Length: 222
Image 1 (tube, rainbow, N blue to C red):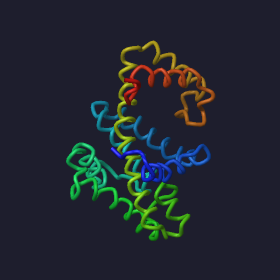
Image 2: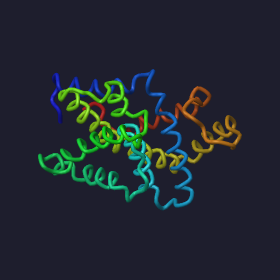
Image 3: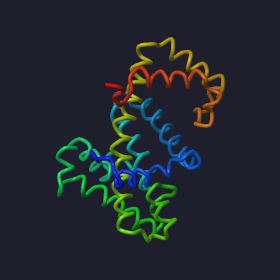
Image 4: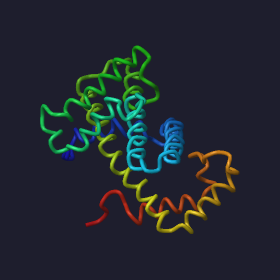
């Protein structure tokens, strides 16, 4: 929705500097923790697959972006975020959800970073910490709306990809068995694989690559 220009570039810069190859590994433990929770919860309640995937993705995004861990689905930040996503067209009208939600999350991080209640690293928290909490109005504006793209762009794409994975495994159980065998050979069925195991899991990497090709989350071409 944002036209290309200086403001678009500045907002993009506010986000991409947190996800460079040297910085992104800071967030691996967060992803791995929630992936483990996702697996455990699906095993306990497989009928809640959709809701569980949705919640764990939101948990990762909110934690990485704002330094807040969602407690459960009744967490007010989660419910507001979902309301904002579900009513995107209405929410983006001035005075409605979106223009209130994202600035409020930014100011929550700014306030709770001082009290120690906001976790680090996070996109907003790290920028505030590096600046000593003194950002110009323009930089604050770019950070607020740049981070909003992390939530809006991350929820539906990740949700689609993960659900497409379950779909693919149901359709192709022979692929699932081969992928599971590769994981078991590496971990000995004693632990979940980690992001740092990628180089030892060529079949899994190929499976994920094919998943992106088979049903990409975003439109490609035209």
